[in-house]
Length: 279
Image (cartoon, rainbow, N blue to C red; front, side, top):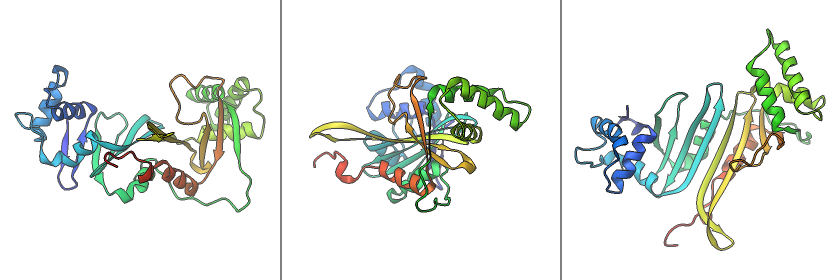
């Protein structure tokens, strides 16, 4: 059921409710499969009896109807995938948060200068210690098949932690004979301690070689709890459907929260990169 909290100007809406708004904004009657959703919006006063939209929806619908930048945040953790995001409009910036197992997301307007903070909050980025100056870079290289094998082994854990690690070790060796200790043990520990994987993707209209073009930047990270943040360098983002196979290389690079913060910041286009009508 949709809802509106006037104290914080926030909404709880499902994708089907957003679809109703899209039809009404275009002056169309929503199709029959969206009638129940329309009725729900009317019950909470967000849509009038004749299809008129409540004034409190102005910033939300203005951003959704004419976005300058779309940011998608996909997080996969213990409870499965959850989608969040931000829509940067001409006059408002709208953030939305999903919840595991819930159909609806919470939409709220945020200040533009808090955008990076908002994205960091969505991926639960925590401050940590920087590595010592001059410390060597740490990378692990294997294959997607090895990762899949490790996850299969974790689906049937052993009677204790040591037994579970042994099962994962066995699965990794069978999937990637080239993965040797210490990288084997390190990769095993990362998989076992994995809190979540997340990906942030930004998209906007820009120019490439002088022509109008859809521009995309993305960042993929493993949050491995006490073992830190690991940037997934390969498969390289953005990934197209069907691009990744079991033989695809998997490369993880140890990072830290300050570096991840900088990479999140770099995802956001500068004003000069945006294709703004009339300029």
